[in-house]
Image 1 (tube, rainbow, N blue to C red):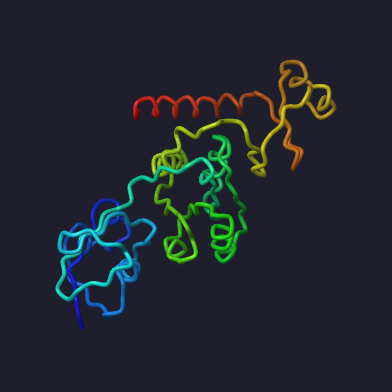
Image 2 (cartoon, rainbow, N blue to C red):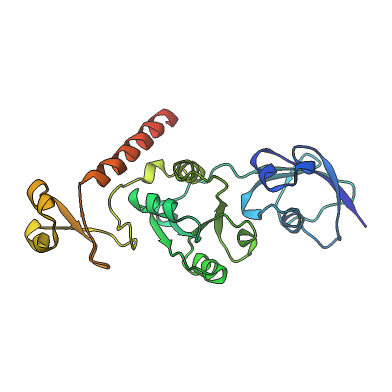
Length: 241
């Protein structure tokens, strides 16, 4: 059986067992298997894969390996997307990240009862980027783009996603409903007056309405907390430019 020596670089080591991290190791394979098949057999989603070098020459992940080859694999660090491609679907474990994505204006589908087949089908049919904590889900060949969210802190998660897809330039905060993802519309105070608490009626005059779920939004304390996050992210963007 042929074999090759593999070395995974950078964040690809997140997916490997400790004994294989950051070192070159031998791995046997069948001659018909591609780099993509072998990488995923080792637990690394192909969507996390960047450059592949075989005997120091770049090859696609669809390449087959010669016996005795030296394979070095690099992570996909960043993708820069056109505005029409910035559309997401998130798995059940990323509810707080979904809220942050919507708050920043990104088209983000999320439910807490999605099944894996539904996530994969939605990502494929609507050409959405799948964000998930399930590496195996990212290995489905129908998924066009995806990222395995390894971070657990929601604020670290949002920064990781913004960096991965170069999203700082696409941020348009407070344009989407945090509940259902629909675009918000401005609405007069008179139209929602009967739904407001007394203090809200007294101190606020600017309102937005979600035409899908009928949720009303105004610039209360929750808005101020979200604005603080948006401001911090804007500062980070300025430092990156």
